[in-house]
Image (cartoon, rainbow, N blue to C red; front, side, top):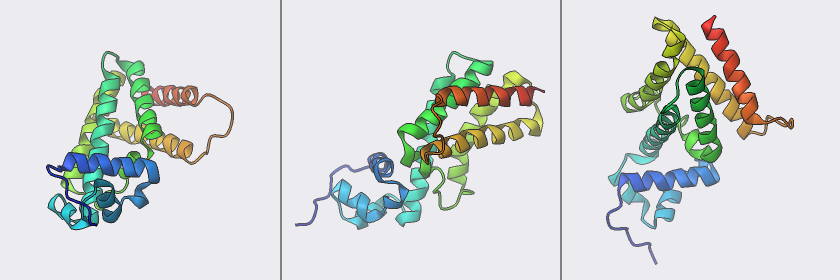
Amino acid sequence: MSPRPKVGLDLATILETAGELADQYGMQEVTLANLAKKLMIRPPSLYNHFDGLPGLRKQLAIYAIERINEELANAAIGVSGTEAVIAISKAYVNFARKHPGIYEATLFAPDPEDEDVQRAGAKIVNLTIRVLKAFNLEGDYSLHAVRGFRSILHGFSSLEQRGGFKLSLDLDESLEIVMRAFLKGIAA
C-alpha cells in the first residue's frame, strides 16, 4: 500500500524532518526517497516544495544557517566583549554537538554562492562583526577576524565530531582558552 500524502505538509515541516534524518544518519542519507518515506509521502510530492535534491540541500543549508544564527544571537543577549565571544563560541560548538547533521548541512549547499544562501550566512557574519566591535576592529580587518573566528569554531567542531580530541581534558575549557588567545591576537 502506498503512503497517503499528508495534508498541509509545508516546507518548515519538511526541513525539520530532513534535519532529523541528517542528525540521525548523516547528510548522505538525506535523499528524496528517504525523506519521502519518513514523511509518508511519495517522492514526487517533494517537488512541490523545491527542485530535486539540489533544491532540498539548498533549503536545508539555509535552514541550518538560520538555526545556528538563532543560537548565536540568543547566546549574545546580555553579554558583551570577551564574554559575548566566548558565549557565541560555545553556542556554535554546542549546536554542532547537538545537531551534527544539520551542522553538516551548512556545508552541503549545492552552490554556496547562491543569493539565498549568502543572505542567510550574512546574518551570522553581521552578528559576529557586532560582537567583535568591542575589539575596535575596522574595515576589512573585521572580516578577516570573522573568517578566523569561523575557522577556529569549524575546525574545533569538526575535530571533535570525528573523535580528534582523545585527551581527558575538558573540551569547553579548551575552547575557551583558544578563543581567549584568538581575542588577544586580534586585539594586538
